Amino acid sequence: MNAEEKLIKLGIILPPPPPAVAAYQPWVHTGNLVITSGQLPWKNGEIAYTGKLGAEMDEDQGYQAARLCVINAIAQLKDAIGDLEKIRQFVRIEGYVHCAPGFRGHPQVLNGASDLVNEVFAERGRHARLALGINEMPLYAAVQLAVTAEVSD
Image (spheres, rainbow, N blue to C red):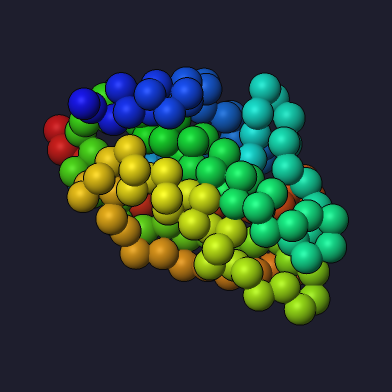
């Protein structure tokens, strides 16, 4: 079963890749790498998860926000290379969690992204990860992440 079939089996239909909201590219393909810009939890043109973890949102909501962010990142990767089977390896997921003071569940929140990538891409999905908590986030989004993937021609 390929990655797109696995997504469909999970009930996930890739959305159109979200457009940039400022002066940057949604992704860059250089050499054998594709690097996405920060992906927010967009759904149907709106930020689906807003607020700070540990205040307006709980860890499970953050997990779902991270999952949605990585779905958008996968849509960007598909836009960049046309076929998800060209992904040789997810190299890194860089995640930022919008946190209230004292929140320490960053790794569990970002598991929402990692768990999905690992399930869909198996060994190709194993990646390094950065999980940081930040005080403010663009558009008051709960989570933002960027992906680096090695791809083939």
